[in-house]
Image (cartoon, rainbow, N blue to C red; front, side, top):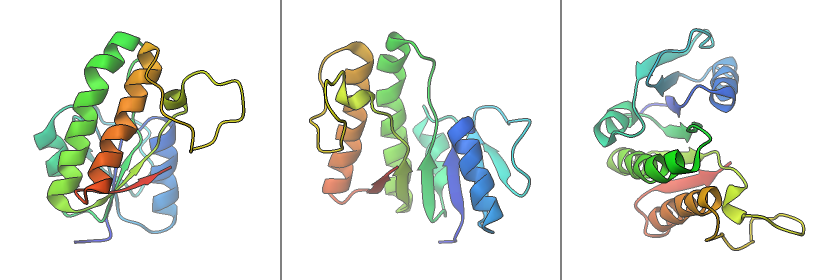
Length: 154
């Protein structure tokens, strides 16, 4: 295993993460379906589809860490269709290679709240987007709890 870090997704969060890792001297490979025109210098690109287990597993092979920093169109039906497939592919890739998964998440998983948000709140089961996004941490928590994948939430 190397010190290489794989970053899945080159949107605002992924790009910023890639730039910071490169600045620190880390070997970084960024992956998504299309190569970004503004990939930070010093990073390599590998075409990867987070909805394809084989593609993600190939991308993860030999890395020390995997950073999941991607998203999908802001449409509930798209989320229902894509998030379960994506998290399955990413967990499969990390399990096959033994890398630690760093998962950038949102607050959708907590649903609407009237008080202060904190990570001990129960995950929601209502609303299209909140319930979809609550299912994602349930999956990686199960994978982490069973020892299949080591996960860090960011």
